[in-house]
Amino acid sequence: HTHTRTRTLTQRTQHTTPQRPCSADHSPRDRAAPRGMARAFTVGRVSAALLIITLMYLAGVTWNVVRFTSAGNGSNSSSISSSSSGSELAGKHRPAHKRVVEIWGKAAIADYLWQHICGFELQEKMGGVWFYGQGGIGKHELRFRSGPGVTPKKVPRDTTQAVMVLNAHNDEKVATALPWVQSIPSHPALQDVGIVLLANEFCNNSWLLPFLADPAYKIRFVLTTYNSEELINGRNILQWPLGVATYRSFPARIPHQLAVSPESTARRQWLCNFQATIYPNSSRAVLLDVIKTHGLESDCFVKTRSEWVEKEETPLAYRESLLHSELTLSPAGLNTECYRWYEAAACGSTPVVEDVVQPAACGRDPLALMREYHAPFIYVKTWHELPDLLQKEKLLTPSELSARRKALVEWYRTFKQQMRDRFGKALDDFFG
Image (tube, rainbow, N blue to C red; front, side):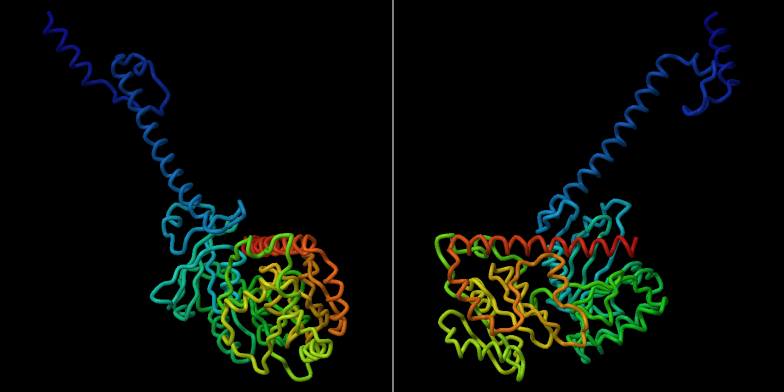
């Protein structure tokens, strides 16, 4: 009897339609399945789900650790995550919505953008042949490359969006910037290009205009130093700060306590400092004459030269003179804007700026960016105002001078954040 029942069950099983997948609707046959089989199937499905959740959680933790570690490299903005240079790990775990933007730096202001404005780190490669950094602004993942080894033929060929930081300061520099712009059509994947430009001091930037007008070059925006009427249009071509002289190794960070020192009970050693190359028949020559005529050498640290020399003074000595002066005198050179504005602000030494359009060919207010962001500078129309200005400065108390230093250093910190936002907005608006 038992044998007969077993054979019948075997024959029935051989003729049973195969069970449907679990995603199918349940037939009466499914509901009639043995309880042990249903329990095993349920346990297996739960185990698989737990495994998937665990793997997703670990992947998320890995990305967050990378991003958190990266954000410790100098970024003050919660919307900006940076990684140390060459952090391939961050790239592997970046969210799918991140857009990769290559930044190719061929001017000193590239370092100002990357290290001072964005607060990211750089890593030297191959003994200084090139430098690499990685960070992010909003939805854009940034990959920075600079150094002599970075050429139009040695940048990633699959780049879709790129920012070129170029030096067009004079005709000689234009000759090195031109091949970069001309190479744009040779990058088949390139869709959008931005330019950060160290422009010509005389505001002669006509070499760039044909490329801006030709859609084949895909130049979506330009951020340019010097407020040139020929170039700036207030829409996709905007003014950009000259920044500090990174070629003189001016540091990206000066300790706050040092920048605002001394305490409110003391004054700095010098009331002002004046360090410049003196060009014949320039306002710098006028300023030097005013200092000597009124005997202001006892109040001001003065160091001048007749010809510009790139590395004549040591970076440390120059920085010390700013840190020990309440004011930094900043007469116009070939252009009104100069590195001293930003270097002095970083050191808590208030810039005294000549409020003139120099050269006249620029046609626009060179101080427009400073006025827009309410720079706490002192403006003079002529250097003959200096003696009276210094007399008023002597009436300020140590406490008032200390408060001004702190306000200036805070303004410069905020200004750099605002410039980072300006750069990020250009990426958002024109790169998508």
